[in-house]
Length: 296
Image 1 (cartoon, one colour):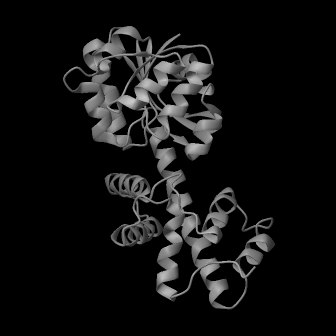
Image 2 (image 1 turned 45 degrees about the vertical axis):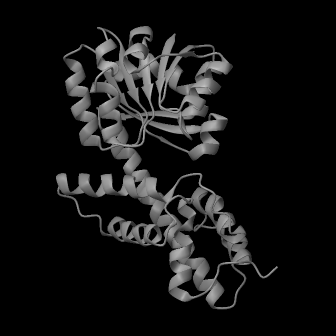
């Protein structure tokens, strides 16, 4: 299959490499020329713009920061829409507003082009390993057609409903992750303040009901003072903003998510927006004037 790929960032680049490793012909475009060169060296073909990608590919994957970037990639001058033809498809694997996903799908129907919203979870390690979880919205027959392609990048690919459902699911995921990190941070700060080694607390509770993948991934980062970004604070802010905007549109109340957003905003104000979202711990440390750190 001829696969186009636009967006060769922290997540997109390793995902594109996995598509290539699976034996698909890959056509790429990104504004970062070094990323394009890296993919070309691995066997991909470079296009001059999105239009060129769409003209050559049967299906195009986009992996971009937010809704305006996806809109621009598709509909701006020399964008994908100018190179699309009947029967082709766009799979947007970005984490964006579900409302925007539905708007893009409706517009692309005029071109007789299919659209799937297929955001992912798993971060950079999952993108590299090909173990990301993909949640997909769109027509079921289109999902079935591209399931095997999506599995070249993923450990699981799940159909969750019509267009927009993929991003609703991803926003629910991000709400849970943000609140989980915040609770782990608060609990380890509490333990430290009480004079109990937070690393021993983590070891004691991780196998019980409080244990989670989030705790297992983020508590060690807090304890090691390692906030190198796997998923940046500023991106989690973007996701929670999309969740809050969507909640207002559907008349839903999500107060815990609102609180998590304010914590992330405080972290951003302190200059940590480029750090991993485990830096939420710094918010609770600042409140309590302590550092989460093992006594070992």
